[in-house]
Structures are given as C-alpha cells and as structure tokens.
Image (cartoon, rainbow, N blue to C red; front, side, top):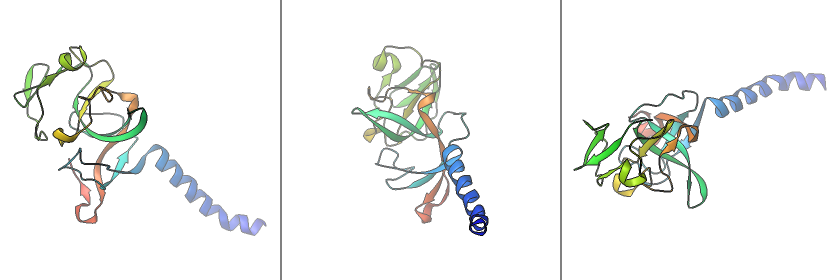
Length: 171
C-alpha cells in the first residue's frame, strides 16, 4: 500500500496544482453568441486571467451577469470606468464630456448615463461595458445588465486559444 501511495503522490500534486491554477489564476472561457463580433466570434475559446484585478478602458472582461433571472457569464469590453460620465452622441464616444476615439464601435445608438439610469457618473467600483457588435449585444445599455460592479468581473482576457487559425493575442 505504501508503494502505491508513493507512486500516486506526484500525480496528486499535479492534480492539486492544476485545480489551484484554474480556480485562482487562469481558466479557459468560451464565447457564446455574436455580441463581440468581429473581435471575437461565437465558439472562440479564450484564456481568462483571474489574477489581475486592474481593469482599463477597452479591456475585454468576463462578467457574472443576471439576465432573465439567471446568472450567466458574458464577454464584453469596458468603455466607462468608475466615477466617469459616458455618452454616445452622433456615434462618437464622450467620456467626462471629452471626445474619445473608439475604434471598436460598429454602431451605437446615442445615449447617456443620465438617459439610461438617471445618474451623471458611474458609481464607485462600477464599469460600463459594451459588446463590439453594438447592434446585437446585451450590455450596460440593457437595464438587466446595467453598469457592472467590480466584484462581478471574473477576469480579463486577451489571448485566444481556439480556433487554432486565430491563436494568440487580440485586443
């Protein structure tokens, strides 16, 4: 019996290390739907970084959202940061009243935080997220998703591992 345990020990260590890495550092995540077209497509598999909890504008993040009463994970791009105002006017992005280049915008209907939610700026620790396929995305413009609290962000991603023809970094 001791001999069997001695032989199994390295395998048990490997299993524990893999479980810890997947739970706390990185894990694969699958894109479901077309809301991130053309940056990401339905079925793409990404590496999710759970360790780095700093989020910047235009990072792609995976979020725990509650849509139609169900908890679901969605992949979106951060547009607005905490304590910022966000507005799209004539298809242009304005952050705190200043025009900002948004190379990911495919077509966004005009809106402001005030029009959507009656607030001038995002609350502390909250982010405004949009899908890159703005005409087909349930995102912060949707009252069920709203702006996202930092605690609901699972992690960020910038590495695709499937399909193999598109493997590597993206932004």
